[in-house]
Amino acid sequence: MVVFVSFGRPRETQREFGVIELYHDETGAGPDGRVSTPMNQKSLRKPVGCSGITLHSGIDVEMKLLPAETGSGLTLRRTDIANGGSLISVSWENVVSSHLATTIGNEHGVTVSTIEHLMAALAGCEIDNVVIEVDRPELPIMDGSAAPFVDLIEQAGIVEQDAPRRAIQILKPVKVEDGEKSLALIPSDGFSFSFEIDFETSSIARQELAIVPVNGTFKSDIANARTFGFAEDVDRMRDAGLALGGSLDNAIVINGNQILNQGGLRHEDEFVRHKILDCVGDLYLAGAPIIGHVRGARSGHALNHELLRALFDQDDSWRYTSFEEHGVLPEVTRPVSKTGLDAGIALA
Image 1 (spheres, rainbow, N blue to C red):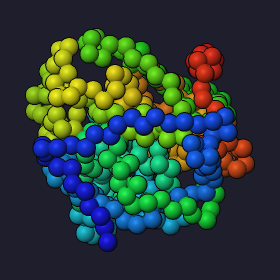
Image 2: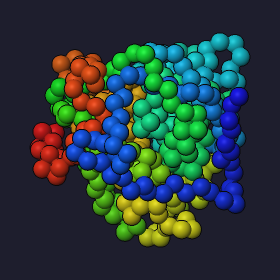
Image 3: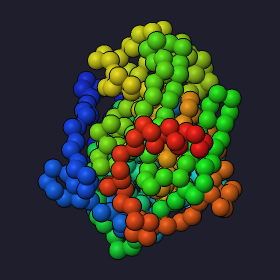
Image 4: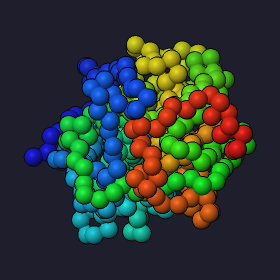
């Protein structure tokens, strides 16, 4: 049986995913004293599904997440494609567009767009193997964040599989730039981010955040950060066939220096948190979790994808490892200090 949750067109109520206060001692243990050691691959315990509207095409879709075999990775299946060619391997090599979203496709020209929020949820929940079924060429936008997808994964349950979890260890700095925009991967003992954005409007202005998305911090601090856009761009985007399903139910809308959403922001710095969310999702297209520090300035989907291409073009900048071999558990990584981040920036 597949459990379905509906996130559709403007609705009367919308679940809010609040921030959870977390405690961890120096061993990485939570308040119950347990230390998570996710050295093995993971999949879902049972199928789960949802329905909802898509952000750009504005159509209703159904999506299912299905358990998958060990070592199979992440696969998208278009259920509306009848005569073969319906499968797309979720990989940086299959990215066909970075315009306002991440779109992947296969050799048959079959595509699926706006995958980044689901990818971020799968990364944050440490899901290695899953089949994603969707009946249209775009995933549902849900509430504009990754939190509804995290909720779906938790409804399905997570099962540990009988194979070690592979990781990508960063061996030397790799950096890509586009004018004032930049993104870098820097060697580090764990997975961490330092990000900054800068907009003219005072509603966003300059925001910076350094975070280690482990020990539950992805769910509590990043997952519920919503996508955002500007009211002045809506007509132009819709004339171009974009944002046709966008609304205050699934995006933060900024008009001048005002936030139009009732209830305002979920975090004071929700905008930079969402940029990190997008980057977490895009970098999961590497095919494995990354052991390294990510330093971003005004980065978006295009630079996220370019960074992966640059990384895999340089064989001496990375290697495959396992968390057992590397001696680092994602859940027990030391917090990133400001000094450590500054050192990372200098290396970039």
